Length: 220
Image (cartoon, rainbow, N blue to C red; front, side, top):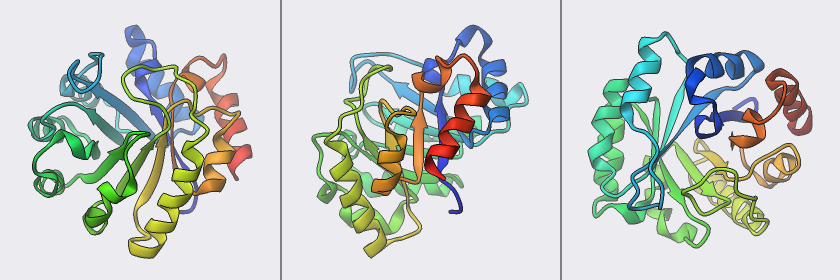
């Protein structure tokens, strides 16, 4: 990968103008659009599902979409998001009895597959699956709500994940999600992240173009 990929989390966007918001951040230089899918069971919040993805595709939004499933029984969400036009789906390994089956189901629909680790979950939980995924997402907050502060202790975990990826499957993208802003993004990239999800840090900025330009200068 030639540059760090930036994915904009639409949880922080203005949903009354969602299509326009996505067009603006993509024009500003964002690489992906990030979906935080919450079911009010695995996490204490409820967000949105595949219908939003389908609507955006129907409206002509062609940006790559990565989906973070914060849900119980993620296998039930894979086909709907595949049909809606998602490009990458990541899920938490503790939410299913068949991790390998879920990964295979995602890839069988032509999407990239990933696994997500909460701050209290070790990398050993996903080590055996590193040959069959394209993405690891390290949570630097506990998921469920936007606008949380970055957990500094996540940096050591990012470094550990990078070492593991380099040793086993260097093609995996290492993502970080939670409280990523201009004040800490260089820290996580230096630690080894090459896929950074930004929500409120971006969508609360007065000028998306200037903010992304600033981010790119910090991580080049």
